[in-house]
Image (cartoon, rainbow, N blue to C red):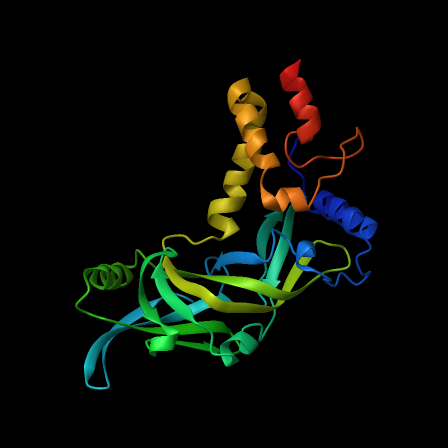
Length: 268
């Protein structure tokens, strides 16, 4: 049996777990522990089928010159594949999900690849956020004398940097009745970021494909490396909070049958 669950198998396992924990039948969320992968998330705009590429141009603003970098950091009502402890599911951001956090004047910075020195910031007036029918957008005014800004603008103009991603906390979400889809109804961007990214934290590019490769290789790991991997997985806070159900011959498992049975095999 393949250790990788398909969408339906993962949904059945997820539904059984939440039902056992007394989750509402409509898939509503009572606490952060019911949110997939915890409440924090980074998602990019890649492959969402919308006009979300970054654009850059030189502008004058309040008597000073800036590079204006503009685009969408999220797109509404466009499903994309994600993974949690049970396996794959479809996630989408509801129309208007960014409106409440933007109205609250959050402290958000503009970065490259979610790292490095801030290039713009809402509290300084150099980063503007909006929400429209397409999604959540941002407009950053960058200092043209900075070398990192020059490098970013050159990459955008060359077409080598086209995507954005954003860091946020989910504050309201809901599973579909069949637990195959999770809808983000509202999120909080305060102390988060919007970023120009090479690929983004989107499962189409960096999570989904690599997850399958990792799962397929687990049975071939040397014993020492496998024990180290198990130890790290067992001490991850998100896995400790969401204990996996025991595996049986009728139950597909998420990662190499189950941690307990796999550990037993290593000790034989």
